Length: 193
Image 1 (cartoon, rainbow, N blue to C red):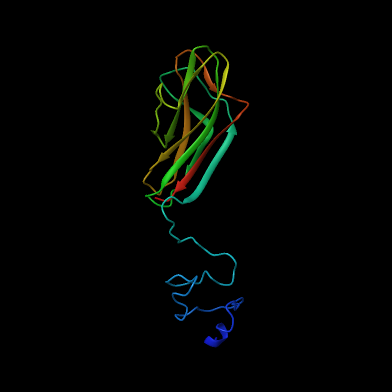
Image 2: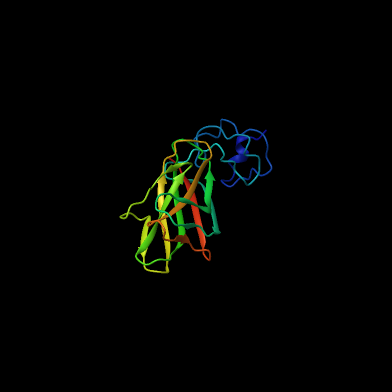
């Protein structure tokens, strides 16, 4: 056993190599929170926070993916998946928010024409575009455009959740596509609710 006097001789007494239980004598002391210091504290420099609770607004995990992909749409009646710009994230709590950020490079191949982007969770469209929001672009012939957008979602689940980007042409018969020479990317941040 360790006598109390051993630990009070110096404020920097080392406990390196000790095993066993830190008893009730160490309560409400500076730097020691109330509660139990469990078996995860075993002399290792790593502290296991697997069961820790973080305040609202903290980032709990990040998932990202990117790739070069060419997807073409020639219809205004349906969206097409941007292959490779999708990811799956498993929220740790139903109260978590998921912040999605994505960046796409596109090409407009016909003058006075454009296209639109759409973010989808599983099979649910989250921000179906109109001509007035940030997911819609228009431009001249052979315009190259970089579109960056973000969206905060509340999936209310702890199951694996898939997010993907889709595109469509604004005019049927005219071509709108992602740039085959540029990286497209999507990132999901789980935010504590």
